[in-house]
Length: 97
Image 1 (tube, rainbow, N blue to C red):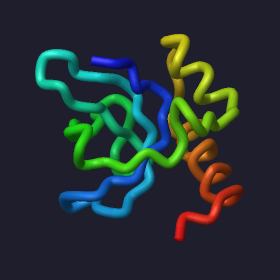
Image 2 (cartoon, one colour):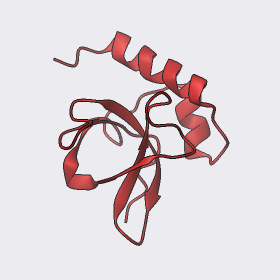
Image 3 (cartoon, one colour):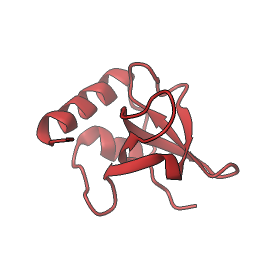
Image 4 (tube, rainbow, N blue to C red):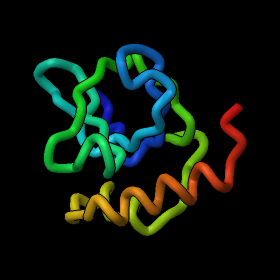
């Protein structure tokens, strides 16, 4: 499975539908993305979600340039607070509607 770490996605299914998350890892065995937003879903306990249940907002084609995202991609530890701020900056800079 491709490494989707650092992508910004919107949940399209489930109880967290329309929530904005960052992919913090990939579960290779079950083919699921591990999502966190730093508030309801902490980095320590990410939400596992199938690739078909999310919509890409910023990923391979639309890179979101933020230091926290670069840290995630390099495997460095990131705090929940830093992730919340990165997602807030993303929401502020784009129109999601």
